[in-house]
Length: 611
Image 1 (tube, rainbow, N blue to C red):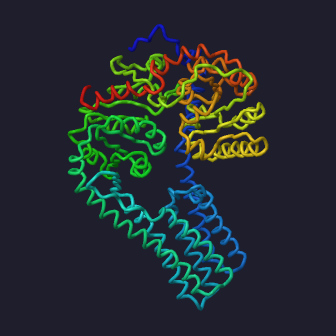
Image 2: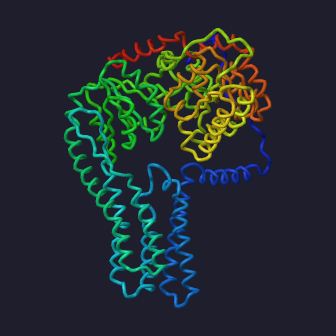
């Protein structure tokens, strides 16, 4: 086991569970509790979405089938009204369930969904139209046939667009996949719109040729996407032929492997500039082809994805003899697929340094080297019982703090202050949710009341969650209203989230309020005061569990300490001395312009083949 530095501040450790005596029927209650736990687990996380889709798919299909059956058998107005209600309910159910994708920018997850429901609805609408316009039956039949073909071809289209999807960017001598003309989900949206408008035309008893014209409007986008699918398969065949030779000629010395589906922009974005400064040829290998475009915007290095249908043989082709090492910035279990290439040195970087569980996971012990900023990075594993051989750790400092301006001399109390509010996101599961967004609006209101200028920079994934996105929008509205009323130059939106990077936000602020996040760690480099929000438990428990909180001013869940904390942030700053001492323990002994030197030295040794 790794031995802790006895001179370092003690990091927190989770409390152990206490054993309790069982009553006579304790085993029965335990069994029942486990059953309830399994039932609750069934409806959590990804399973919840799968179950909802199953219920909606089955329910809407039943509604559509019943509606069509009643319509075909109906011999009176009342029965037809019942059928119309059932059919409308089926269509509404589908639209409501997929409203996020329909309204979203990427239209993801729409293509080839609810095919049977839409087909039944088209047949029902066609039969209703025939009832209203019997003399136009050929127009109507032709229109319904075209619309049905457009729906029924979607599964094959989806397969053609995804099978063997291998995206390549920036690799000389290898063609890139053709750009998709539009999001494939638009075909499904057009289909749903066709059904709704066709039903309206049937009610109005519009001429049958209008229905045919409506159906034919779906043909151009269908043909365009079909052409793209064929061109993609042709290009994929060329890539498969030409990739091995081109990659060997390029001769990468290391790879950055990425197995996640979201977060590439900030997770890879914080490390790629430093890896590029090694001045060795390298590649980024991403397991998911959909992320290639995003990653290619971050680097000029080749970005490769393996074929989805034969992942392992495809990865084998990417691991050329010149590769010496692989770096990892995200803790996906999918990393294990690439770690099986044992001749490479596998280096864990992570994408942030904080007290979150992602910084001390058991899986990290499988890497050959673990790059940590300071002694705290090692102690986290020890304190949480994660056994990692000491020789695997390499203290490299925190390169990302090199552009953070250091201000160890405090500002005089009582002057104007600019405070950065930088909450984290809610995490992948409730146990890792440290976000203060539910309290964010009140925190920002308090800052505004104190006369502070506020910079608001939420975690990038905040905008992927509907609830937190709405909260962030209200905070932006609050700042916009106060900026107009008071003239204070608050910062939010494009300025703080796109035009400025994290160090720029730090440099423009006098203090920060954040959560259990790498923002707190990196802000230590500035020497300025920081506060954290105790989103779980009491302030005392929060400080026990999260070492960083011991040198931060802690805001409780009830916000009863908020005014007191703001007085410290904007005034006396009593924790300043402790924070300065903790900085070296956390970040290493190098801050300022030379903060990346040790990383570049150690990473350079590894990519040159020194294990």
